[in-house]
Image 1 (cartoon, one colour):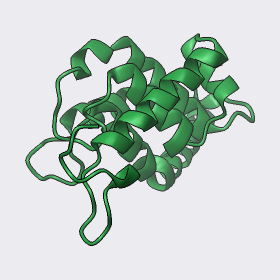
Image 2 (cartoon, rainbow, N blue to C red):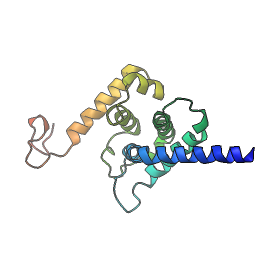
Image 3 (spheres, rainbow, N blue to C red):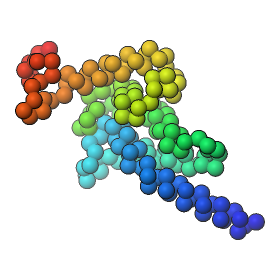
Image 4 (cartoon, rainbow, N blue to C red):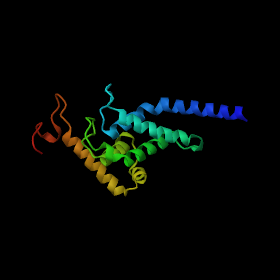
Length: 167
C-alpha cells in the first residue's frame, strides 16, 4: 500500500515538474506583466511576480490529481488571475514595468485578453464582470498603452503627433 502511494506521489511530482518546466516561463512573464514589474532584472524586481506565480502553482499542485482532463495551464492561469485580483491593492504603485501605468484591473484584463488570448466571455466569467465591462476596460487599457508608448527610433509617433506633444 505504501509503495503504491509512494509511486503515485512520485509520478505526480514528475508530471507537475514537467508541466512547470514547459509552462513556467510563460506564466512568470504573465505574472510579471500583472505585477507591473520590470522583467529580466537581477536586482529582485520580479519578486512579487515570482511570489504570485508560486502561490498559483501551489494551488494547481494541490488539485493536480483532481484535474481529470482539465488543462493545468488554464487552471494555473485562473489561479494567477484570482490571486492577482485578490491582492491587486499591492500592485498599484508603478514599478517600472511595461504595463505599470495601468490600474491593476486594466493590467489583468489586458494580460488575459491580449497576452494570453483568453476570449472576452471567458475573461468576464473569470473576473465576475459583464462582457461589456471587460471590453471597455480592454479598450481603455489598449488606448492608454498606445498614447503613452514612447516612439521607436526611426518611426513616426503614433497618430501623427510629435513626440511629447499634447494630445
